[in-house]
Image 1 (spheres, rainbow, N blue to C red):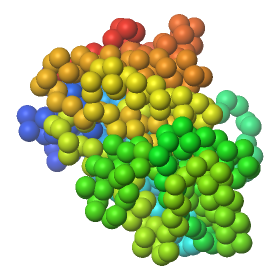
Image 2: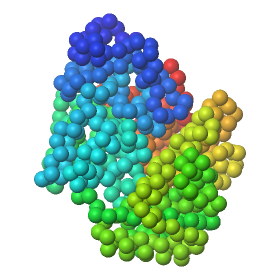
Image 3: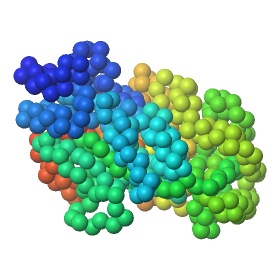
Image 4: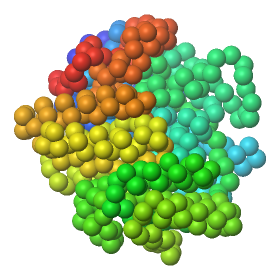
Length: 470
C-alpha cells in the first residue's frame, strides 16, 4: 500500500476528487480484457493535464511506486493489469480533440479520446483515419498508441504506428518532451516517436498525440467468397496480393467462427462452408469496380463455391459489424474466452490454419480461427472455462505450440495485441536473448527505477505463461 506521505503528495497534485484508494475502485481497475489476470492497484489517480502527470511521475519515481497508464482496458495481453500494484493512471479528464488541421491533414488529441468519437469528428470534415481496432467504440487513442493497435483495414493502410507523427511524452523523471511534428520529412535525431508507439506504457506517459489523416475514399465495395476447402481460401489470399491488388480488408473466418457469429448476429451468414473471406476495396469507383471483378475472378480460380457482393452499404456494414463481433460471439460459448494473436507471412496462412486445426484436435479444445488474412494475422480463439484446471493446462500447451509454429513459419507471437504480461514468457522465442538485452538497455535508459508498467514485456520465466493474482 502507499505510504501516507506518498498519498498526501498525490492528493495535493490532483485533489481528493481525483485520487481513490477505496477497495471498490481498486477492484474495478485490477483487471483488463485479458482472461485470468487480476491484481489490485494501490490507488487510482486521474490527472487533469500534462503538468499534473509530470508531478505524479516525479513523486512515484522518487518513492519507487509503479505507474500503469490505462485507457479503456480493452487490450488482450494483460498490458494494463497492475501486476505489481502501484498507481493506475486514468485519462478521463484528458479526453479532448485539440485540433483538426485541414491544411496539414492532421488531428491532435489527448490520450483519453475514444477512437470512434475521433473518427466521427474527422469524417465530418471529409477526412479519414484508417486504423480501426475492433474495440474502437470504447478504446482510447492513448491505448491504441501504447499497443500499436491494428484492425481490419491494416492490410492496405497500415496500423496506428503509420499515423502517429508527433507525441508529447512525460518521462519517468517528470521531464516533458515532444517528438516529431506536422512534417512530411523529419530526420533530426533518433525516431523517438516510433520508439514510444507500441512501448506498452513501459517508457513514459503519452499526454498528447498528433496523427496523420488522409482524404476520405470516394467509394467502397464489400464481398464474401465462400469455400469448402481451407487451403483454397488461404491460397486465394496470396494470389490476390500476387495479382498486385491490395484490398482495404481481407478477412478470414473458419466454419466454427461462422456458426457462432451467425448465431449471434443473425444476418444470414453461410454456416455450411468451411471458410469465408470477407473482402473490401475502396477508392475511385472505376478502381474499385476493376479490383472487385479481378478479386472475384481469382477466388473462382481457387474454387470458391460462391461469391456474394453486398448490394447496399447496409449489407456491407452488417458484414463488417459481424466480423468485428467475432470475439463477442465466441465469448457466449463458455465462461472464459482466450483470444490469441499469431502472425505469419501471408504465403504461410494455409499452413498456419492447418496447424491450428491439428493442435485443436490434439488437445481436444474448441478453437475458432478468424483474423486479418491479408496481413497474415490470425486470431485463434479458445472457448474454455478457467475453473476447469485440466482443460486450462491443455489450452496453455496448445497456444504455446501455436506460437512455436508461427515462429517456425517465419512469423511472430503477436501481430497487434502486444506482449504485456500474457505474451512476455514467449518473447525470447522470437527475439532471442540478444534482442531482449537490447530492449532492456533502452528500458533502463528511460526508466532506471523501473516504475513504468513493471512486469510487462520482460518475463521472469521464458518457458511458461504465469497467471498472476494479488
